[in-house]
Length: 475
Ligand SMILES: *[C@@H]1O[C@H](CO)[C@@H](O)[C@H](O)[C@H]1NC(C)=O
Ligand SMILES: *[C@@H]1O[C@H](CO)[C@@H](O)[C@H](O)[C@H]1NC(C)=O
Ligand SMILES: *[C@@H]1O[C@H](CO)[C@@H](O)[C@H](O)[C@H]1NC(C)=O
Ligand SMILES: *[C@@H]1O[C@H](CO)[C@@H](O)[C@H](O)[C@H]1NC(C)=O
Ligand SMILES: *[C@@H]1O[C@H](CO)[C@@H](O)[C@H](O)[C@H]1NC(C)=O
Image (cartoon, rainbow, N blue to C red; front, top):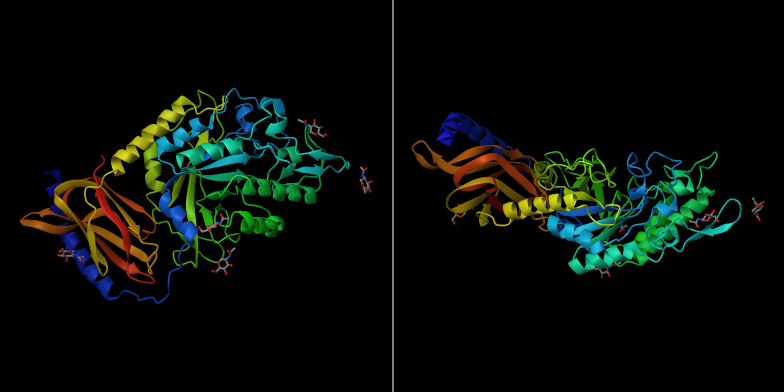
């Protein structure tokens, strides 16, 4: 058997590493520093949801395909009459969340063009002294009598999907705002002349509408953040209306902060941590929880708005790999839903997401074994009989006094080796530093074993306490 030969070849290496690990254990640093703990809201967010959605359905759905939103085209103010869908069926969107296994969804209520998909009542003064309604909104479009934020929230509530809203606070082409500042110089066609002060007042009033009218939000999304001059105002509104929401890019604004992983490809480093230092930078020993979120697209080329029926989407295997480089590494996976021009999910997108959801349910639905016992820095997962396994899922109990205390670990399999019927043999790729909320360890091949041993070599702030340690065979 292939496997036996491979095991023999690593036997002496194994002896060597055991000597080393005894050495490491005897020198283990006992650090008295206590780990921080997530807030109750962060815990709820961490525990209930591995996958979320970010819904891109707005004015930019209807602009020429060479643009993916109004981003970096400051003079582009699409004609309001372009926003003219046949049907918008938010239940149809929610079906894809359910099929994918997502538990929360965040709707882009205003993107960078400036168009609002809810009937905003904000009015304001132009520099000409004329007072106008915020009339770049669904109310003034051909489908005037609609509130898409309301439809979205209703559909989600019915399916038990938690909701969030995205409001771009630093871009607004209609109001000639780039990078949080009203731009100097001549206006492009369709743009409204306002002062910086007026802009900031509009942002706060619209956030108040979104945060006070649609129930409690699980997540608030600040793409690119918000300007320092708005911080006090936003902070007040958060406290008043959505103190329980987790906030993407919210470090310094709330204790329920979510950290942006920093890329849009669905990739977290193998060892990804839940905490940050006082500057908001990832740090295993940081004093604050700011849990990472990994947003990514289904369409290729980092495309967020619908690119048309012929725009390529990523293959299933790539989505599965993405799950393992995000959820499997302590990061929440947020998929894009690029709703089509008819207001529905493209069938091709819906099918691909369902294939992905089916894979995850099949693979992780039923563990081979999940009864483990721990003593000190070692936990053992015993199988009812000898079987093939190709991965484990490990989670630390973030509610325990230790919190996320593990800093270095490895896995051994209990298997047959030569004359020995049950020897602990290292599973080569199965070692690392972080566990945290969730770590999925792929062995790269199916291994025949009677059990798995989790060895912890280094901890900070207390002994390891696991919430989950189980094994699967998915190939
Ligand atoms: C707007 O009103 C202010 C104060 O009443 C006045 O000083 C200013 O000249 C007006 N601007 C225009 C363009 O009419
Ligand atoms: C919004 O108001 C401005 C200023 O009065 C006007 O020029 C523009 O045509 C209005 N837009 C719509 C869609 O009503
Ligand atoms: C926040 O959560 C607490 C505890 O569940 C609840 O009592 C409170 O009403 C929530 N606050 C908001 C603004 O939803
Ligand atoms: C965050 O937590 C700290 C420490 O518990 C507390 O002093 C502070 O008021 C909290 N901030 C917010 C915005 O809730
Ligand atoms: C787990 O329990 C078994 C017997 O039930 C015992 O032999 C083993 O030493 C225990 N392992 C740990 C790590 O406590």
